[in-house]
Image (cartoon, rainbow, N blue to C red):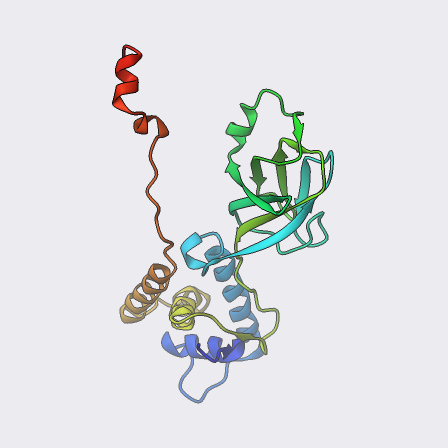
Length: 234
């Protein structure tokens, strides 16, 4: 596991890559603060790219009887980091885990009886609002029960030049070279082609390492035995 890098050192290294400073030189306070701003902008953008965020995490929250809508994020009903997206979920009832399907707004709109209530929820709609996300479950729970969400992480944004950034193998190299490319316009410069090429390769390698296992899916109707289709006259 990489030991990490101090944000000010990351900015200094990226500036050297584009020739904004020479070896041994130190950025001015304004240049360092500009670099912090550009770094946060870049990380915020990367957080919207699923493969630029390593892995997902499971978090468990509590469903409240008769409550179908919950806010999620800092100081929300479910107090945690606001997720970029929710990949999967399950509800636990009497010690048994039941899968909860994550659906789109259009699929939720097609539910005829949205007030239907039962102990186990079956569907979950996530709306990525800001500053708090909004989760709607269906059917409306009749009992308190834990629900576990598999959420895409959001990358950590440094708030000070003294903060330390860490990540999986390949992350810091991608950060260093991509930050150099992003930083170049701040100095009215074009990044060297070699730096651009390394940035593209490093980020590509990092994203490939984050690629999830793809599970084949198919229409359940295709598994109906042919004899049944024949008996029905199809």
